[in-house]
Length: 298
Length: 299
Image 1 (cartoon, each protein chain N blue to C red):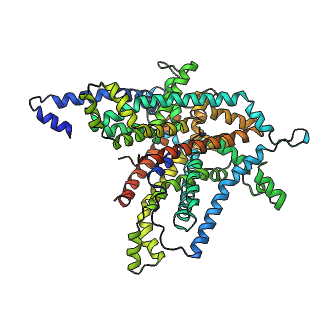
Image 2: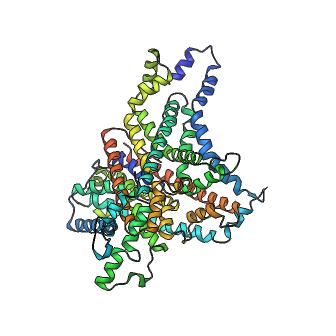
Image 3: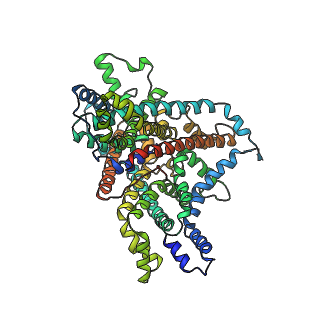
């Protein structure tokens, strides 16, 4: 949904911001005129830096002049007619959804089990989930390609195999956020009592997880899911090697190299999608008391 | 807790805890198997690859890190990361100060925070494109400056695809990330601390120099180190902006993936391991400093 997390820690700020931001804090005494003035100067200066590129992109997108006649909507109409645009978005979205499902399938039972039965293994699990922070995406895809591009695990020879490795990689990238979201969600409910109550009523493990635990950590799961979607859709570094230019990120890159105006439109669209994703995440996060903390790694 | 009680009640079954542990391990098997296949194995491949030369165990690849384009690309990566971490850190902190303590209207704070969430995630290809439309050869701002003020940006030697250009672009995600991570720390400054300082005759400047900044220092330093890692591992933005022409560690790796530009597979693995080591050190220091900083935020 957002585009190209070139920087591995981007979603971290979002998660941290659920923690305490907008809580108020101490505004201190009434500010002097000088403090206000300096603050305004800082704010306006930095705001200009952030807004000018967006404005310039907008101007670029309405610039086309076929035969000397300005046609501001031409680039927009062109993009909406591009097959690759839909293919890219659709492919990345589908990969994102599959990634979320697999990630949940692995992380929910794992976090639950760590809390209930294997607290001693918590540091090991946390360490493994944090590995994507330590290994830069381009280094990670390097290892993936060499591992799965050679015998005996030759998966990258087929399209399906490449997709499988791509999903596997994204599931790994989602672990730091998914595990923390689910774990903090579990911390907010009394997992042990819920489990024992369900067991004494005769429920099996599957039923406990699906019917008792899962509904109790809905919010955490939704947050983790949207963050994962935000990481996956538009991701460039890994997709460019494993997704054969189908994915949204590599497609946009290709467009940016070959076309003058349409990439501006797609850039604006991806910025808009990023907004939607972030607002959704903020909305979900605000409604809950789930306190998510990342990379503070206990 | 309940486990302990349960075991004590069944005191006659000493084998119980051991079996528990065995079972608990099995519950995590899917997670460990998946992680093994998709992150441990690929990483191990890089580790073993870096320790081999001509199919024999060797440390030669690490010795060869000093050859060819590698030292320059590592140094450039470190330089760009340092510059954007420090500049982004300072600007992000100033912005956080301005919106939290600077007496600006409250709605601006919410707006800046939300925008930062978006901007810190707005990286890679679209970010590079947005800046190309702004400051590229035919960028809107470039043309505007030339037509309106007769100022030719390119005559100053500025290129978006150079180090300076790249640094300018990276600030777009570094400043917001700094703001988002440092804002809770600034919020954590307690009213009582300022009041106590004032009661003892401190001026606002004294308070900042002797109380607030020392408390915030671990957070500020830690976050800057995180920004360093954030920029060090970035590849997509630089790739789109420079077409791979700038010597950066991440770009050298991507060139090595496509076509063994180092003419030695093992050397690529050694470079990859070096990058992992640099990231590990950054994250390690960040974690330690963050833990230190949180002492003040607690309670």
